[in-house]
Length: 507
Image 1 (cartoon, one colour):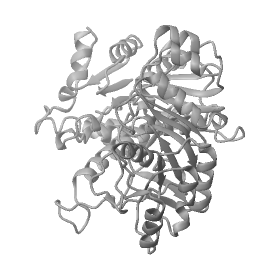
Image 2: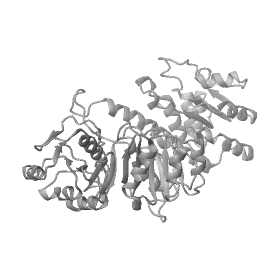
Image 3: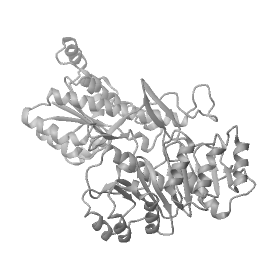
Image 4: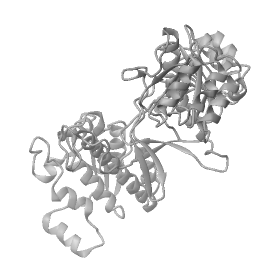
């Protein structure tokens, strides 16, 4: 029996090679894999000695040879194959161990592997006779099968082949993504690339089986994109139940929002993927307590995200409130101990989220795809539409209100006063209702504050709720055919109004 070993990820390969050698297998290898096996004192034949050719063209050609691929693809039950093998001196290869360099780690033309994927695909095609191992975690099970029965079972070879094609598909997806990121779309120049690639290849790997889906009768899981690592992949859970689909979905929304509203200590409370509390302050305790005060009824069973280390004082403030998930960059030891007494609270430590990618939503037979919707505190391009400009204090609240309303389900209105969201109206079919809901929730706390709308006001009555709540400044995209009427109504009410010229619908 012969095995060909050629791997980028060399974890466990020496131990695996030693076990194969002790079972009487002949080992063939190349490059760095051959070197580490030989240095461990394990007999191994270099591919160059098998083929009679050294690595050429700067290692672009190493294993691309009939004695390699003939041995991998030969069907020993086929008389014609056996005759060719005898004629050309080809020996069968029964086991191939190969995994590929993570292309996205350092993409370049020279790291586009040809021989490796060819070996993997050839072995997977011939899985009736060849076992292809691309994952080091499989080594132990393979050795156990060989010791128990002398060969790798057909069921295992089939599963290994499936995993092998997934491995090469993920590798090709990384290369395609690199080309899409750096090459112009068809008919365009390199100086003016299209916003969206002509094709998208989705290669997803299941990373986490979730407690259940959106509802308990649904199955859910978290997948990662090929060649990518997000903050979820390094997050640590310190306590509580397993995460469910909505726990992950809502926590993602909370973590992104708390990292998008500036550098000051900030707290966000999310419920049903919408903020029900947001605040910034000079310390994280004040930020959290003010965020919770926005809508304590909705905060029950919510998600809390903080952008500072959790202190014992904050932990004690959170403890009386039923919370599904708490995510923060860290915890003081006594704070973590206090929080872990709440057995159902999922406590996460996480790094900041990366930049958002393309947004995909399934439709019948395909997907809707769009670029991200970035929101910053950069007010370049904003214009004051009213006779009165906002004061410095109003500007601060306007910016925060705009950052928050962009992350609220449309139609959306957000009221902010002194760095605290005090009223949030979301998911309404008309803007008046969203504003009225925000004003009711504010309960008089919005006096002198900011009123933000994610889209323009189609009629002047869109300002009624701002006036009702006592807000003194308004921020909205503008662009309605009735802008002049809306501005006139704002002037009549003494409101300062800012146009951003950018809508932030979120469905």
